[in-house]
Length: 206
Image 1: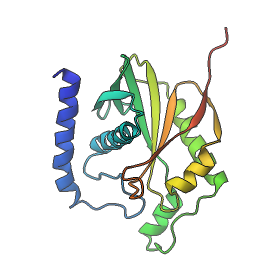
Image 2: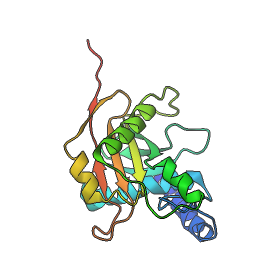
Image 3: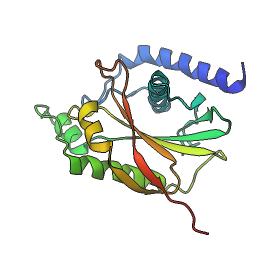
């Protein structure tokens, strides 16, 4: 077993231990399927590992040997090895309505946030723009750099979201090569379904 596989196994063992603690931790109570109050580093690793499992289930896997880079060594949050060789940088971010979180904390939990097409596209575009603008990338060099946007918004089912995003093209990305929206567990699909976003990658003109 090489060092990367060993690191991935150790992280998985730490994740299992954290699950026992997580049950005792207080979550925010809204859109928190992916939340790990006990350890942000493990949270990011677990999110990417969920994407990895879903990709493999769809016969679309392209990386292994996943490790978390740890606080102070980001961005990116995680890195892995591409099947064809080379290192993969992986940044993680969340799609959530902050107003709904505050309303829930203030005791108003009757209605989840509403998401129409305009709000969804605008919010994802903002996440892409922020993460694509990173200039202090650590580690590497990375052959590829991806963004994983995770969400547990109650109104964003996979079927509804896919119908909006399957044809939409996001312009432009210079750092990010591929981007995925990862949904919380869906019993219909028996996994955390994902949508690969259609992004145009900016290339330098000669």
